[in-house]
Length: 112
Image 1 (cartoon, rainbow, N blue to C red):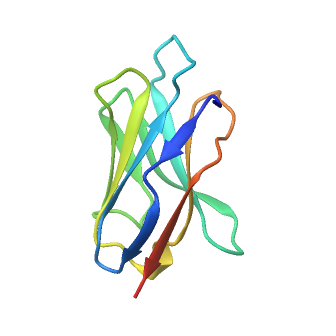
Image 2 (image 1 turned 90 degrees about the vertical axis):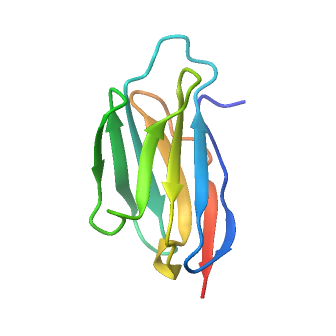
Image 3 (image 1 turned 180 degrees about the vertical axis):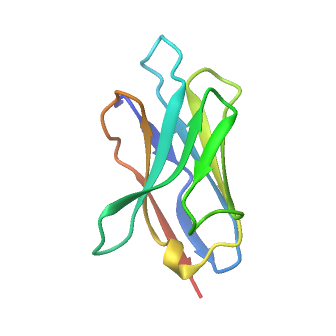
């Protein structure tokens, strides 16, 4: 098991929802800063959401109002709730806790 594990991706119709999960189970100390990235087919990886200290959040314009980043109840777990999904949201989603390496990501495919 790697340092960062993402899950929850899948195939969904446009307008639907998914909740992505992220965990860093091998890290004992609490992590306070986490980003979610997305890499669409043929495009560079882009940052879409960040959370600091569990309550300060930032979102890319492309997902603002539709996605919500949050801390999980267990230590070093995080979620990305994605609503009103669009085909442009298709890509591999990565969770990036500060100072940890990239995980494998989780694939999200939105079909119209």
